[in-house]
Amino acid sequence: MPSNMSRYQNIIFEEQAEVLANVSFKGEQNIMRLRAPKTAKKAKPGQFVHIRVSDTLPLRRPISIMLADPKTGTIDLLYKKIGEGTRQLGERKKGEILPMLGPIGQGFDLSDTAKRYVLIGGGVGVPPMVFVADQLVNKADLVLFAGSEVEFPFALKPSTFMLPGIAGNTTLTISSLEERGIACRLASKAGLYGCYEGHVPDLAKDYLLALSDEERGRCILLSCGPHPMLHAVAKLGRDLGIPAQLSLEEFMACGIGGCAGCVVKTIEDGQEKYKRVCVDGPVFNADQLPEFA
Ligand SMILES: Cc1cc2nc3c(=O)[nH]c(=O)nc-3n(C[C@H](O)[C@H](O)[C@H](O)COP(=O)(O)OP(=O)(O)OC[C@H]3O[C@@H](n4cnc5c(N)ncnc54)[C@H](O)[C@@H]3O)c2cc1C
Ligand code: FES
Image (cartoon, rainbow, N blue to C red; front, side, top):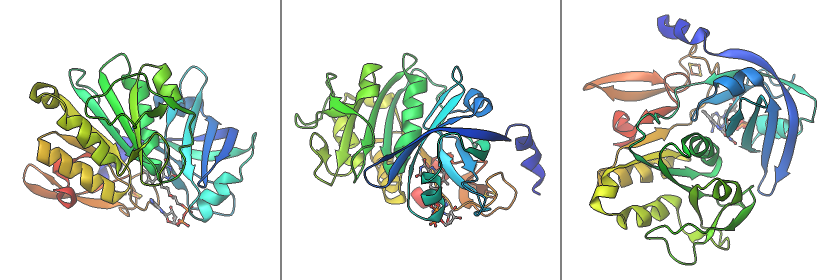
């Protein structure tokens, strides 16, 4: 056990999460609501839970927390069924209990409320961005850009918020965000109506380029999604001189810092260091990650 693992032992706990709903959407997507009051109380945007999806699969699966409501004691997850574990998760029914470790990891740093947070999520990287937006609303400026190559598993509507640099045919937003006053636009290469036709970092770029130097100077990029998308976001940040925080996905075994199966190379104070994505991440500053430099 690494010597610094003990500092996570009081933070990560196992909770018997009860399935309240597990709704399927197009594109092999599901949104699951779990009753997990301890996790709901502690969860922070960017953190994830490590779920035992069934008795037949001993290895847990990591899934980001999309929303946590300490009042109702519930958390929401959005996952894509890509293999055996997530397929079995899709079969779980209301009332079933899932042993779950959580909340795990270092999430996004949202402490500077003078910043304008520009959230860029792609595919199953959208859920942590929804959680960030939920936590930042009424506290800091924010705008969310979400990309998907399959239909979004959310109710959508035309947005009434004007955003600079965004083409007039890029109208749609996520209804629940619009109702809370959160500006958002969507991107897809699948020809989805009302969405920007292209990759989501390019949509964010159009917006950022239309800002004044002063406004752009206040921005910070937060992103989660597939690696090519994170590379594009890191480049966008470098090109425009905007700091970026990236949430990484790595194959995980223990998920609690014990096996070093998820390490990634980082640079800190000029020194190379290997960090565990599960507990030292999954969120890192882009300039800490040589892979994204
Ligand atoms: C921090 C974190 C947050 C995540 N959040 C989400 C989310 O919100 N929604 C979502 O749909 N998916 C998310 N993922 C990816 C999700 O964990 C994988 O899709 C899932 O583990 C695949 O399991 P499987 O058995 O269905 O697929 P298989 O491909 O059959 O999995 C086989 C093995 O590979 C591992 N594995 C496969 N793909 C990944 C991957 N991308 N990352 C890590 N391990 C993988 C599995 O744990 C399993 O041990 C997240 C991953 C990480 C690391
Ligand atoms: S998965 Fe074991 S240390 Fe991260």
